[in-house]
Image 1 (cartoon, rainbow, N blue to C red):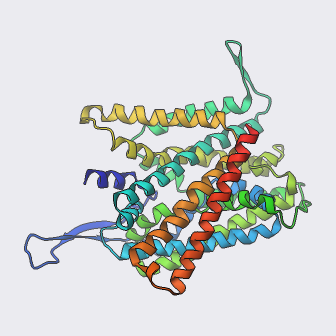
Image 2: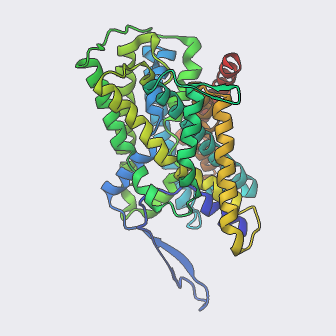
Length: 431
């Protein structure tokens, strides 16, 4: 029970989502036997808002680079991955409907494959979160260095360049937020993913159409060698599946769940595609792993796009790292008096370690490609499909459902294998 409770606390929660009511009812002839009933009260609009915020993220700044890697035709793969992830989102619901005790993403792994399944799913979730927030630090350092170039400091004869210096400054700014155990305030700030993405896309369009950058980048039609990087970055954009159980539980009318998935995934995919096309048209093959690094800082639209990119990760860092902190805390035995100290030690250690990785591997595009291939694909494609086949027994029944799931699994494995290999080679070559 302790392990189960620990995973429940370590699961990703949706910001501002507190509409689920829990109570016990007697559903048996035995007087003392009760079962738990969870009643949601979240409206359709609010649920869509939360899911769009969950899907929208920093992946939007690298999506033009992903399109440049694979060429114009690779945008088809963006829509393919979006459709596959939307479908696997419905599988999460089907798994939960099979047993009312399934409340979180790790619960699905446990119901399908026991304690080992729970452990694997938890490791995938928390590793993805940890490496994603590490990417935040790289992004902050790169974009601050773009705004304030040619900065460096000398400490004891050691020269620290601008990007590294700004990454360290960002870590200092973030430090107080990770020390808080109550994330309620930050949850309000972080629930701005959709707004930030909209502002970013509009700024990008304004920069190209009005501020003189233009849309002259022709690009390539197709680049086979760049497909592994492209699909890995596309997959990174759809890594919100761990929050789906919380969303489903909170819904007032659960029959609208499929509609929520369709609307949210469609809206986010349209936004990602728009950003990819705009960035690629503006800069062609010269587009950077973060399109903000291509923007001329003398333009207002450029500064707005960069500022929007800078603010969101700082607000989201602590909230996204919290499940990882809680997962470690549940494994560390401590009494009430030193819980606060334990939290501070764990959160600070994770922040410092992510800083070390960010400074050692300051390669945002390649690192996010690795996260997308190795972890996002696992969480959003492989885990739902494999667990559903096991829980439902559909793998025993030949039919369209089994074929579709196996095709999705094959696609996920292919992205994981080739994408991870390509990302590791790129990282090693560029260190």
